Image 1 (cartoon, rainbow, N blue to C red):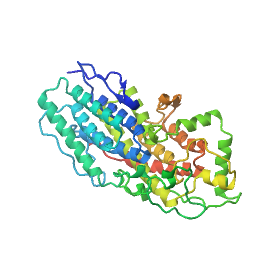
Image 2 (cartoon, rainbow, N blue to C red):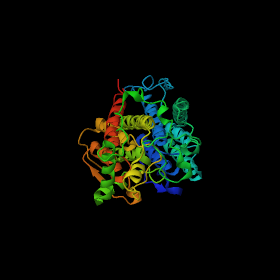
Image 3 (tube, rainbow, N blue to C red):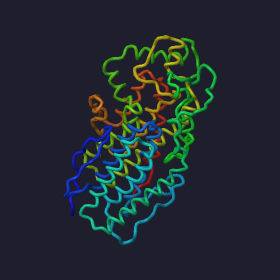
Image 4 (cartoon, rainbow, N blue to C red):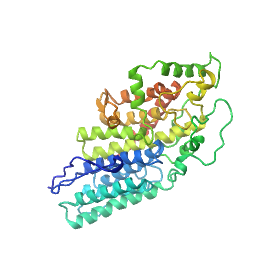
Amino acid sequence: MVSRRLLPAVAIAAALSLVSFAAEAGPSPEEVQRTWTRMVLSLTRHTPTYSPPVASRTFAYLGIAAYEAVAAGNDDMVSLAGQLPDLAPAPAREAGAAYDEAVVLEAAMSAVVTEMFANTGPSGQRALAAQQQKLDAATAEGVTADVVARSRAFGIAIATHIIDWSRDDGGREIVNMGFPLEYDLVEGPGYWVPTNTIVQQQTPLLPDWGRNRPFALPATADCPVPATYPYSEEPDSAFYKDAREVYDTKNALTPEQAAIARFWSDDPMLSWTPPGHWFSILLQILERDSVPLETSVDVMMRLALAEADAFIGCWDTKFEYNLIRPLTYIRRVIDPGWDTLINTPPFPEYTSGHSVASAAAAVVLTAAFGEGFGFDDTTGEADGLPPRSYAGFWDAANEAGISRLYGGIHFRAAIDNGLAQGRCIGQYAVDIRTRK
């Protein structure tokens, strides 16, 4: 059997990475999956429309396509058709015919990534084309021409099936980077208003995202959250006390708290975004522990479903309550000159997207790897952020949640109730059936 060993990646334009393979070897299916995941992380950082919700959607379709491609060749695995809304059975493999799993996975994943990043810039397009060319050649190394052709055709058929399914989910078209050209702000002191002077951001990001078709989550109403505190500027009110906590916490941050806020900031175009951060964590674990293919595509698919549903559910909640940001309230009521440690995102406050997404991820990853599964997170190393160590996934998720209080951009209620919302959403991804 031909050994499939992945060699170190080399840098290409715009900080995107392209893998290189030895002439006598090609990548394993596991390495193909991880290589395309790394590419998606890089493209997410360099594609202007890729806000956190948009990134989560792409990871979902990529994870589903990779899972279905592998499951079709494994008698012990179950298709997601009939489990996810409107997903019909995928094309089947030819009975008794030989397939190469690396070629299948390369064809399926490259086709999905190319579709989802059709609007990325010239550097991204060059990186995509070059990586696909390299991986096409590398996966075909040592495999007979008929098996390569059959495997590639099947991978493309799987990708086409998933892409066709994606087209009517509500999230395909991103106009003006997700900011409506026309939008009527809700009038009243407790409602969201823009928090910066950027012209484009005078309307909120993706106000209809919560109406998108969910994945494992039956409906956003299945993971409700409590109503927010009644708006008040009275010092003895719960609303004022929540705001005062944000104000006092940010003003007295310890160096450790400031480091936590920056580590989890995950700003679009400056990072891999919050869902990308959790895929980075999973990728580090998959590579560290040499996780086998069936488990690798399974857990990545579940994480992808959980993250995508987290942003649908969270955005539904954000625009139901349309709550004012701490920055606006504190400047209005407590201290006109106050500022946050990190940037306030351009959309309503409640619930915290970091909290929902991180709790959903913790549910999935704890189910996959167990309680007390320790790991180091090196996600921010390229940006000069030291690695952080965690005793388990909930340790990381709770830190990600509280980081938004330290950063000055969320009230505690949004964090606590967001974590509860994410725990509920993540469980639906855990409950997906993948084995006979």
